[in-house]
Image 1 (cartoon, rainbow, N blue to C red):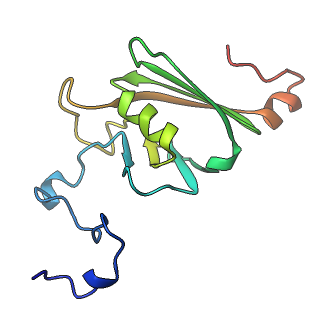
Image 2: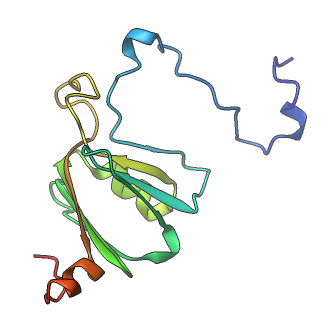
Image 3: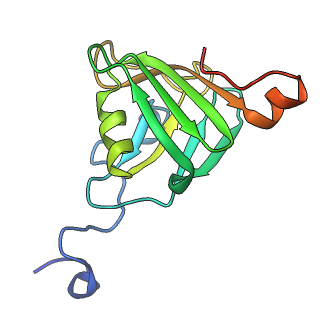
Length: 146
């Protein structure tokens, strides 16, 4: 028997949202480069920069996902209105979640907001650069991925 009174109404393979087993107020500042679940497609992707700005873009606006398939140190998202450059290490789980449409957010590391991540333990986003097409046109430039 389960402790979840709504378990009979839930889709097979889903569980209610809970804090991680090792959650404590002390480790609530633990850095997480992305979040995604294989069986839950998302409508929007939240792109979070360390400057506090976030972009919630619809998956339907992502035209192409370009990534370094050898080292997984870079991702370029081509959207209808912007380019998003993501640089870091161990980005393969993020690429996989993006390709499945299950990535909830991508988050740049901010030393003021998060504790230092464990070395070589999971994805790490060093930088996120958002290049807006409207901003480029206003400056008289063509949007490029350079």
